[in-house]
Image (cartoon, rainbow, N blue to C red; front, top):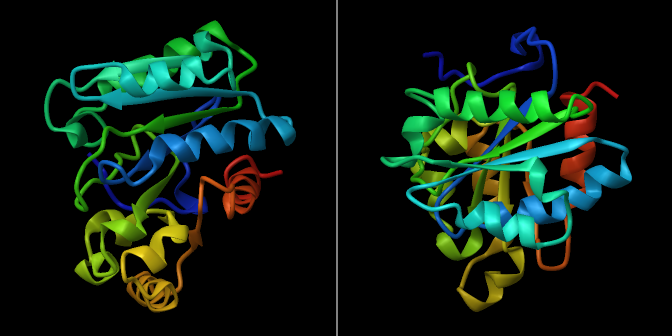
Length: 215
């Protein structure tokens, strides 16, 4: 399956909701980012649904359902049962089916967020599954992550460096980490976020509305 990074010229001609992948290591803040994006998209009039992936549980889906931020029926859970990247890259059938089911249940859905189960820096999304994807890393995971040149960091459409508020507490020079990430990505898009305070989230929502929904 094609694992190349997408661009506007490569977006599939799929009829229906746009599909966006959100990947990254365990604990990087993917679910927290989704919880912040839900009201941001609502404020922009975007009809949303969500698919979460976990190894053998529906923990992330249940967290989002309990949040009160979105109709619980608009959140589907996929249990990977194996390495998390398997169901977003090698054989994304389960995720495709879950997204198709949500579109059938909610014909008004414009955007489906597909959260990967936490995985390593080699995790990427198949373009059979998503139109555009972001990769989330966090400051507490180490300022050397951008220098490791993992496919997730290099190939995603948007790199998100999360938990910027933790930099002073873990000995990370945030400006240097951001500069190294920008160098690794050769100027391709990236964002700095602090989901606890909502810093940087609106800019991500605006980029998706512009670059994916073409508004």
